[in-house]
Length: 160
Image (cartoon, rainbow, N blue to C red; front, side, top):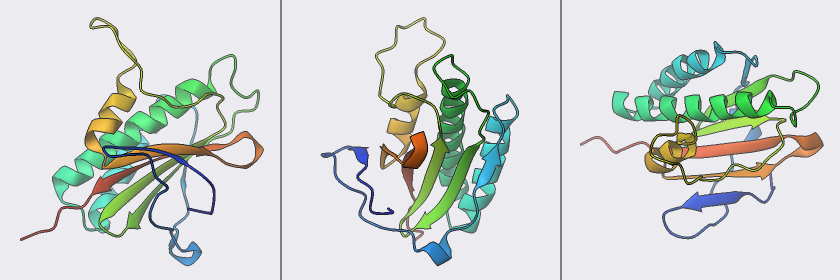
């Protein structure tokens, strides 16, 4: 993906993503404000796009949950005191990656996405565990000017 080294989390071992989205096939992103309405917008957009890309309704729902979690994480991280002083929107892409739906979220928040150990009664911290459970693989990589990309692949099951 764009020739940039990414950290990928998968059931097997970390490896670079095995595909590249051709520039001509990449649709414009959905720009999302840093507010509480954006996760819902991301969810609705992702369901629509995933269905257009051939996902089943269940797969589109999984993709939407993942997009909502990634967008929520990006917004929350962007609004922390260590986040950027400028209010740059989070960007969401939902693309066709062959047998999978690719979800990408770009943000300017500091920090590295990582699975966290969460106490039983905690209200936060389970988002990436959900992403990890529902995706074939996920990962992140730094981009230019302090931006990072967090991505996840949701398999499109073959229909009998």
